[in-house]
Image (cartoon, rainbow, N blue to C red):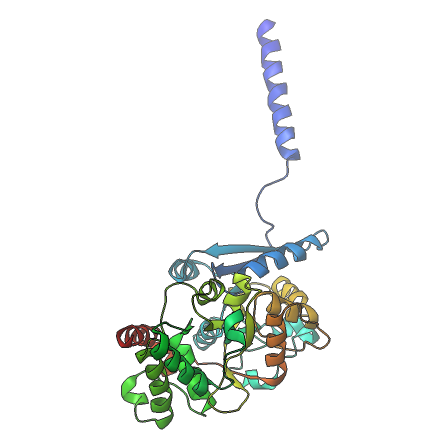
Length: 372
């Protein structure tokens, strides 16, 4: 009798545990969650984290949330991408265009329908994937930044600025100008003259525009007026170490350098074209995966006001309609002016500059250090 009671008690306990387990909520993401990958340090990464939280907070029952996954570097993201595919990838236009040419993007236009962002027609000239497989959120570009001392003393044109930097270097022996990207600065100089940069000296040396631009940079570096640093330019400006710098707009936003004067990068000749890097979301969902949930997030994110505000929060030029948006800082005012009056120029993935950019940057920095 005592044994039967013991077995009954054990069976009852087991039944209770089973019922309790059935009543518990299962952990883990919903099966239809929208996966979004990005590399740490990519412009807009921090902004997207806040946006995903806002989007998920307003979803109703049964809707698909956005789940973010970050990677420390491009190599680790590429390795994971070879094994699996996220629905969306935050990346540069160069990466998106290359993925499109490789057949690795999905067309979300049908899923978006009339909710597709109204991008300027000029973006489609670079790749037909814009607005279909790749959705730009903003354009990163180098701007001219100056501290209190340098704001009033900076000449208007780039040639005059470099000549004054050369004169100051000769007079004081101290640097007064630097650039976050010397290759970007040189390309911007050629763009203002109506040329493009290959990034290979043997190809560029026959171009008179390249010779003119390179000699201006070399002249300023020869006297020490133009110098290269490992320290971020915005930090050097704030510390008063030098008065002028060419700084990426996303870096200015990330640094919170509110005390600096900001303006478009000076040019050698008048014009509207500026060197840009598009940052946006590429649709990389695997074949067979429904695009309904990724498209719902894209439609929410790419409404005109939210799209423009997202760009400005990340220090980027808005890529589409931005009417009625008031700038919250001098940096945002410059970015809005570029959106209205400027024309972005994108180096293409198969262009010489894209292939040679890193080597050119190292070469230019070494040349500036040698000339100093």
